[in-house]
Length: 173
Image (cartoon, rainbow, N blue to C red; front, side, top):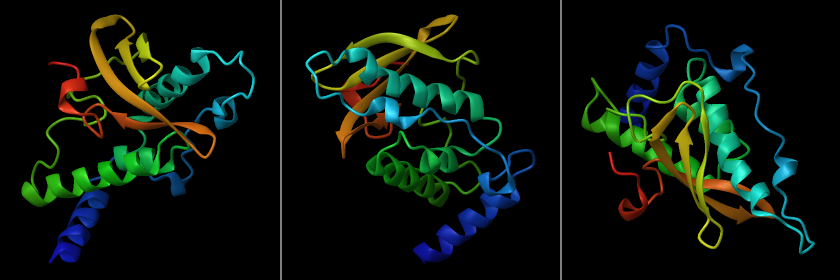
């Protein structure tokens, strides 16, 4: 039954695509160079290199939001951890199983329906925990929480919005 629902969800999602395109159709998402996020071995490593991964991830998403579906973006992002990818996929599938007409009622990466069209800038970074709070450019009151992790020597986004972010760390709406 789960496989049938997943298949129906996938087919419905693909059938509803009016203007959005798949990456395989030639729409290239410009993602940042992940080599920038390899931790340096010197003591001169700055926190700037760490939180920049979060900014690049969320701003790349804003730039591609009208071109690519959320799940496709995250699955193809070199800045997203495997945990973020699988948790978002589970969240999307569960939402469509629970309500096939509406699916997700809000964007889980923004934890909202709207978003700042000019992107985000750093609001706060907690280096020991890896939590980053970004705020909207020209939308100072719109904030999103992200969490960074180091995997295989790279800094990756492991949580964003409501995906892999504990309730007590989420931004109140």
